[in-house]
Length: 83
Image 1 (cartoon, rainbow, N blue to C red):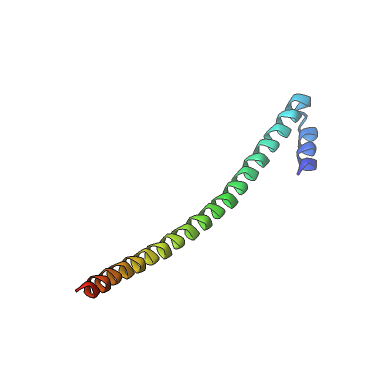
Image 2: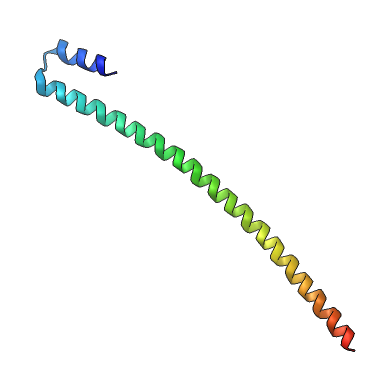
């Protein structure tokens, strides 16, 4: 990549500042692509974490319902035992 940029700069006769601008532009483009790739990877990890948390919350909700049923059954049992 850098060789082709330097080659283009030398052949077109843009001078040292033109060559530096081309290098700066190439670095900026490469940097943006790298940042976008990192953002995509991070987004995938975030989605994975969110999915895991939502599954855990579903399981927790089921456990909470089961505990509530057990409490109700225990209350009924204890109330009947008193009578």
